[in-house]
Length: 149
Image (cartoon, rainbow, N blue to C red; front, side):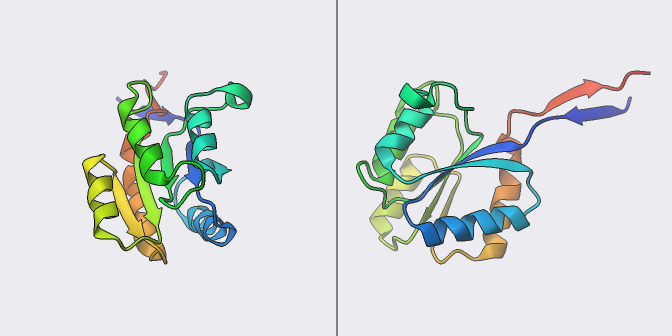
């Protein structure tokens, strides 16, 4: 039996405080093979408000993927990641750390918090695009319906 896949663009939450890094990430996603919608936030506390759908973020879509810089203001990326993993409602959202930090402790702590990827800036464009493409398997939005005959 033939099946049709019906879905929507992947919802990506980019948490990055650098305009330059955000533009590079957006450009890489645009060139990639993933249909997506992107929300860009620059602050860790604001990111948690978004993820918990509080205040002005009450009606935002839930992200299918979070791209997380560790060097965020207010709450750093590791704090944001720890809160994501501690909350049963959002703990399963795939998170990829995209950071300028070369600190081995940051890498180890991220791995302990079960990130799906850890990329150090400047990011290799090809590796980044492949990682995002591989993460399609986490994308829960697809519906597979049997073809109508």
